[in-house]
Length: 74
Image (cartoon, rainbow, N blue to C red):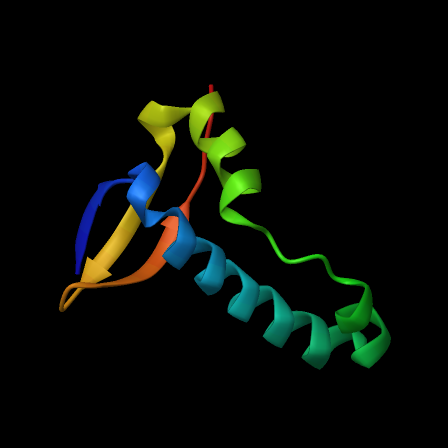
């Protein structure tokens, strides 16, 4: 796996990854009601996080596919 800086072009795929991860965890830990209340992160929401800390946002990539992301800020 390669770690590289997150780019704005990555945001649709990252939003999908985040949605899958949160949906799975919410369903397993808190049930269908929590999953129904969850509002998936959109690329527009994630761009705000990227703007807050562009030097601290990264993705993991393997075989030309994103498999993780982290958003940070100072």
